[in-house]
Image (tube, rainbow, N blue to C red; front, side):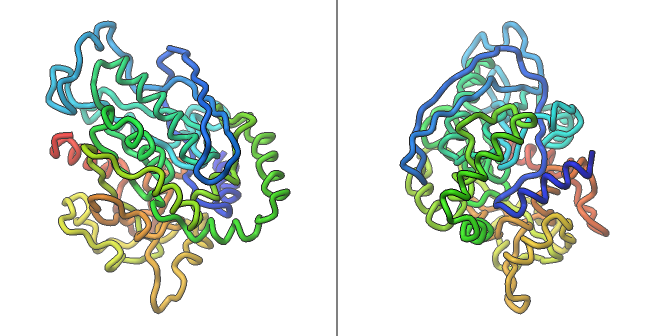
Length: 369
């Protein structure tokens, strides 16, 4: 099984911003389906996207939504629900195998730490964040309706952070905060390189056709409008500039970011933060050896060894800075979500993804979110 996942990761790592495998829990059973039509920021083609009902890590009481949340935290209903937004390549369960999940073991860990409302909705694994963001918004609207809370806290990994920014831009009234982890807010040179290799429109059409053909049996959200080429275009320099212009930060929403560093780098100025929390600063001297899956892309981003660019194997640290920056953790792009299949981050690296997620959410709550 690990070999299958590794092959899939290696295939997509060569194609842009990649997350490992998907983490979700059982659907809440509402079964609602929403169809949205939108024009993406990187193409003039009209794209129709379909989203399925969101999933929650816990069963909702029949009276759990009986009153409205008076704020993002501290209300009669308790703290705002956490919505974990997966990145590029994300899916529910690999080929319906329940043990292969994106946020690996994280939902159970947060539940054990006292978080009763943790949602992991699924969106199209290969599409730009206009399409994915609208799908995520459908889920958020469903979550606030189900729980009775007025707001959610969005925590996005990789492209999931861009999706979360779309939701916050369109419906800031539903979002208390957007927390992004290793999100390419300013793009990634990997996409620029790959797009140079597949600049022929016919080649892009072929890639999209293969994704739809092969991926339909693995990703629930794949349909005829799924587009790998649109995803890659968004992470390119011109694509991300257009995205950022289209989805500026919304007043009243708090934006927080952090990222990973690997290839044994300590990060330097790219990872400097004004006031890093302890769960980040305590690892300032820890080094992470890169996972072999990201060795090629990480080295490409790093560039000149005499003047290296700190990165997590897919996203430069500078690109992940957005809003209030908390710093860098010693973890590559997959380590951050416990992949592959919960393996340790690397030889002699004591950082642990379970401890990290618990500490991150505790910090979020201490901040009043």
